[in-house]
Image (cartoon, rainbow, N blue to C red; front, top):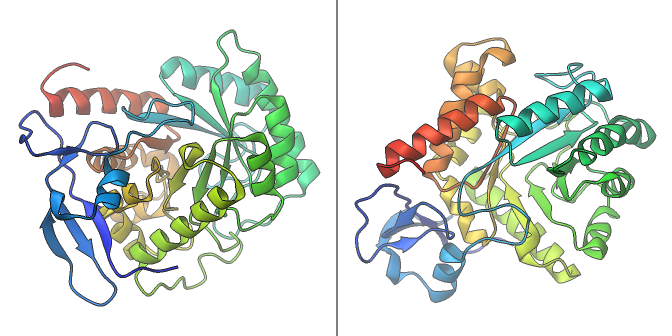
Length: 339
């Protein structure tokens, strides 16, 4: 359901923090002003403390409950156990290769690993449930057998896959359809009280890039996520167990992606952590004129650091060591001290 006014904290980072500044989502960014967005008028800027009390409560409350420390940036390493993912298809198709790569990501500083067995690149076709389970369960079991078991997410749209993954050791369900694909998935997560990530990707990957259209992409995506979060919370899943992802590259043009990136901090008003998955995507290649996805590391890091300026708590990336290093230097430079 759409609303009349939307409140976007205008985040800042650094040591010169005014006394009246408010902490954004319990994290490293702060704000003194809010941009008020509307479907019927031009944006306006107001002082933060002029916003309604319930809005300020959502914007400032610390995020917790998902198992990750949301007061600092988190890196989610991508493990696609698929033959056809857009960037790394086939690299981790063998379970032992995926497990080895996952171990390397954890050693490099990844906070969580996202294991997927179905490509959701533009034009991808749905994978049979049994095949998807066969791809992901051995990987998750191998990772869960590590001496210090890492946080593991299952990237799936299907309840049967999620159930098998949770039994194997996964601790978070990341659904790129925003819980619109399989009606059995949300009840499963509610019953297990399992942390979830709700992404804006309601169209099937096979058709999602066929002339995507929005009235106002930023507000339309916000409304979708707010509605899906409300569906989950009304079903019995606490808001503290939910992460939101605006779905960069899923049913969106380059202009749509850039509009969302420019106003990412709006999504803090959902009252949940924000995840950004922009790593190596086509719009990065278009802007930087880099054709091969594997060569878009620098552009991906550029987008990731811009997201940190918006207070985004989770970065889903292919290139974990480079991203971890970039975050460490960004934090040191912005704060004026080593974190």
